[in-house]
Length: 235
Ligand code: URA
Image (cartoon, rainbow, N blue to C red; front, side, top):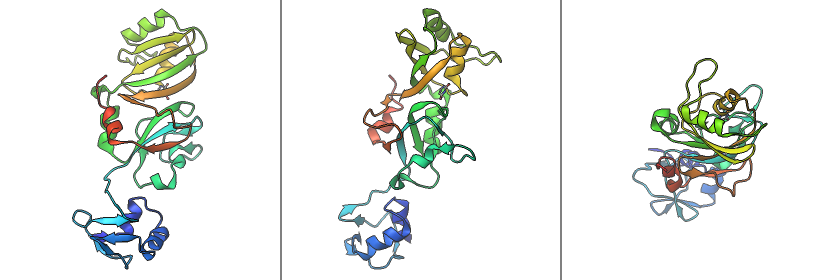
């Protein structure tokens, strides 16, 4: 059992003050009865809550798709730079949210933000083989030799071995790279080994989930259930 105001704040119906206003305006019911007390005790497993006539569906976790802009770091807090969490609109803010995986500060594109640690682990662990695809631009022409080197598995200068990766040339210095691990600066370093510098990097998909082309840079929205599952569908 928990207080109705606390429950509604946790479900993103607004701040405590806003939720109190909602309750006072008679917009909230529990099992068909209008709520009059902000501290009414409710059991979300048993009682049916409505707000403005809509049944409240309880979400244990939040899963957010963001089109990450450059200039933001993938961290929950940072002393120097702005974090991706600062881009979340008030209705998508919740305790415990974190970026699932890191994109560099100057990398754009598909980022998942969640408060579900198991989900993030499933998505990120190389053993789970969830592929991540990136659009990449380089300072020089990408050649067949680079494709072959990626296919074989790049070895960094410090001896770290990368799993085989797919590289498709779109034209000249533009391509699509697919990897299923997330080593620090992995794609930039893989190209560096092949004597190319990455000048632009954008993640375009994770598993079978593509970045929503309607999301402008910096925008985000909740994932649908189908999209969430698409991450783990084998291509
Ligand atoms: N590889 C990189 O080098 N940077 C990223 O942000 C993601 C993958």
